[in-house]
Length: 397
Image (cartoon, rainbow, N blue to C red; front, side):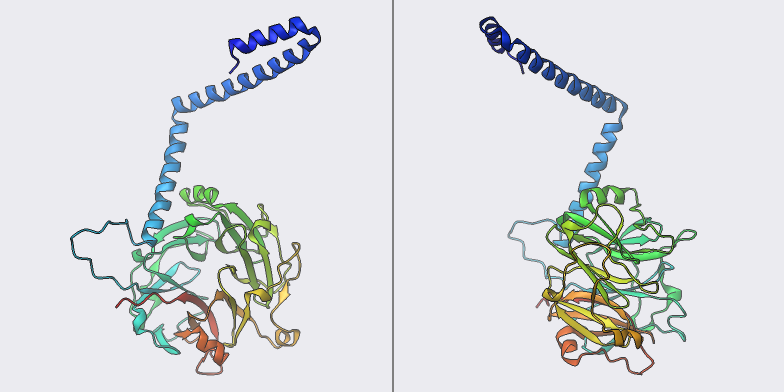
């Protein structure tokens, strides 16, 4: 704001020192230019408001914020209620949900009481003569309150609460009776990603199977969720989406390849455009991507059931992109055909669920698995296809 007193001050200054007139005129010209620019912005905003475009944008933002608030409420068990004279409700025991899904969009959900889990025992079995029939399933353990994002390799997405998936009989798992989120033409289901805790993180990191990465602000990512499309995150035709992770800037992002090469880097340093961050061999691909900063150890599982764990401090963050990565397997083991089927950040109190090639699902306490050194597969020909780590819910008395 240019006041009348300010104008009088400038006139007096010019009368006293005429040489200052040029400087004062230049300041006034710059200020008028700023005001003209601001006037144009306000005029454009008025046009958007009159046309309804701005209203639609605000409504979209409000809808996105309401969705994120609902996710947080679901994680916290609903609204906060002040104590009253009414008797307290009986605590509900949180259930474990084991999901099996395939690239064809088939999903089996088994809901389990954590008090009934027996370490190193079969907890479910796919009950068909050839349980996997050439399909590569993935196992995911999540909670009943989780929100699931189905991500297709085209970049299309579908959001579903875990409870919207029908439950299956653990003793009679059959793909014929599975829930199907059907892919469109030339699509495959790449990954199912839990997203309920998304609002508490600053950044979303998208990784591909060929080692390409891009990061985006979570607020930007949620705007894409509203459109049910987040992009494929790939540059190469032979590449596919590997997964999503949510992180804060100081978190350590990690990717692990099938041949045992590891890329790690602080989330803040990751590229905002799709870029190759680890250079993989022609036959290699990423099998796991995660944020490691909140767990003390990393667990690696090979196809023959060997369990290798390292302290998180063992990781050597990359100083640049397109490096070969840090190795977890020796050259001899790679040449012998040993491959990594998955990796995850863990602590000793965690559990793991393992999918075997004979269709068996088994559960392990990880501190027992660390001591044993391997997952029991029953027969030499049986291998591990996939595994998922979870923290045991608190048992309610």
